[in-house]
Image (cartoon, rainbow, N blue to C red; front, side):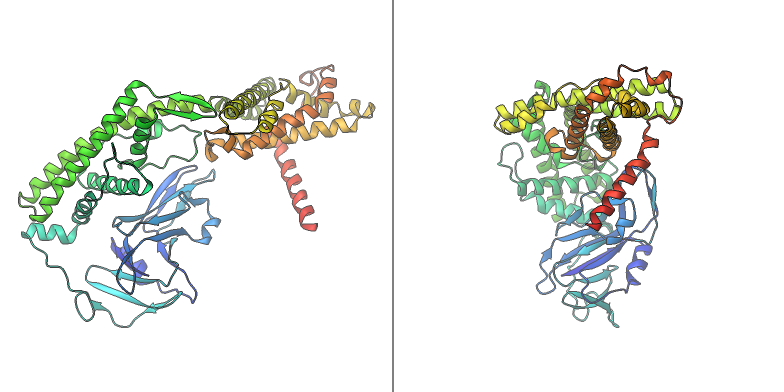
Length: 546
């Protein structure tokens, strides 16, 4: 495979022309970060790599798709590629951009010149660096890369392909040879021939990919024509706990909106956890008209571009740009109108799905704040609120499993287990567990060391669950409860340990409240966390020894 690289500025050109570190057996070619960029905690950011690239077969020149993968050294940073592996279509000619997530709680700065990602090919790879006039060629052995050849040849001479004749007025010739605008227009015209009718044609995955590519080109044209509209609703209407994290281009047109409109046209509802949510009549009507508008506008724009290209912009380049801008503005307005109303209703649905989980998250936030203030009365109140939220979710989960059983999606055994964990949890159970440790000597006098062990296990399961809940805004959850395996496991462990500790909790409930007796070393996350980490370390060492 050959990879032709076009640097977009002098810094990028310097990075790639001076990059000479290759080794036998290499399957990747490093890409560089051009500009310093800081990614905030929990943020999804787009890092522009300052190049365009096209891959093709070294034997017959056939265009190829290629992969963008993270370097192994990314594990030393808090950054992760949002899509794990990026697939670059063979026809994509835009700037290469890496979408990354900062998964930690601190900001991280990517330095200019740093090696960020790798191009990967299953066969041998030859990078070709182009400044539109010169190619620097690398010798290649199958599966490895070596340094640049001594000789560099201008395109069109000695083995180079003959250039296509460029026609048109001087302004048009300049436009064709010095901007990506023209290449984007050509791709739009080419894509239009294979576009499906989204309102009526059967839409398989390949059809959606074609639409996605065309919408991507329109987004680029909008950027070039400075067609801008406020799309802040994309973030506002995306639920704060929903997985995956929002990854929206504020200037683009996501094909997911077209998918959603087609889904609403076919079935105007969503089902989560056995509960069906109906979209409003307004959204149903707008979805149908939106799909028809998409078909009309895409054909209208492509139908305007194609004859202009063939005539070398016979109506005048300036006139073409003005009229195209008007058409793009109409398309943008149409797209935004539907996306905004659809995403608002989708948020209402997700608000209902995540309501109890959000109560749990907020209780944990308030509990942490009370602990930091050493407000013990408020701490105990928030512990009770946390327990109530856990109990409410387990009841809701049991109801969801009942509904899924009726629909034939789960077994009776799974329903029975969910019922078991839907039983009530004492509201003061955490306060009483702390009291059991405080009144250790009284429990020991009864000869019930096992009670103390059960109280400790209950507290440990509580801390594990609480740490997970605190991380939900960053880690996110699926709207289908059953898909959140780790979350369900921790909730059930908390419930089970609470049931096992019931005898000691019942016993200490008859003793004076610890708020009247205890004055220090309260059961807080900050105090318990080191002990939990030590426990994990001991288990790890024990496992290694075994």
